[in-house]
Image 1: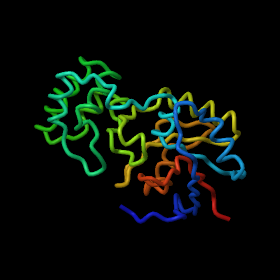
Image 2: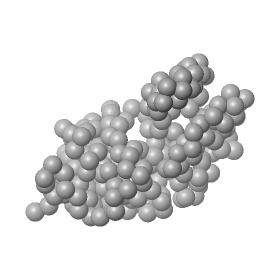
Image 3: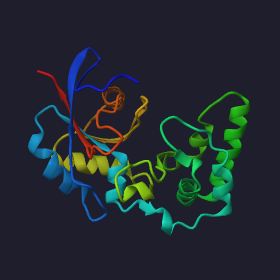
Image 4: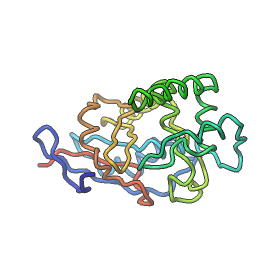
Length: 226
């Protein structure tokens, strides 16, 4: 993984990434209010604002305490066959697998598991998530976040990230990208508004300048240097 730094060169141009610290967010927060409080006072013409997907999901009430989940046999069985990955537990936990089942349905998850198993035999990776869909891929297992109380919750992916990004971009007058990023070079825009380029913003955020720990920086300004 490339070292994190304030500046990055994308397509021959230099950009500055400015992570913005907030308070711990919860389901009572409105993301637009958070942007107005923590981002807008710092933004300038030409800026793009990124929002991490899990904090957005938290404001939508998508963080589910493990203690409230009813974990079924299917989740317990399938979670045993999920491969280990270097960036987190993913669906290898029965609780996160249960949330994926709740989001996508047991039949789709079963079909995805069958296709994924066939893919592994053929030397392919990622077939499970291609079939299960984005919401299954976006589930963050409990302990993914070190920040209480979210260290004991499963965080589902945000609802309608494309629609949310478009609405937020229109409301604040700047391009907005909702990002799913990890600390080993994975960078995906799952929703964008205001004309933001998916390829550009994924390249600009590939080293995860916001961090994945207890930084409390769910927002980041991407600004052309100069």
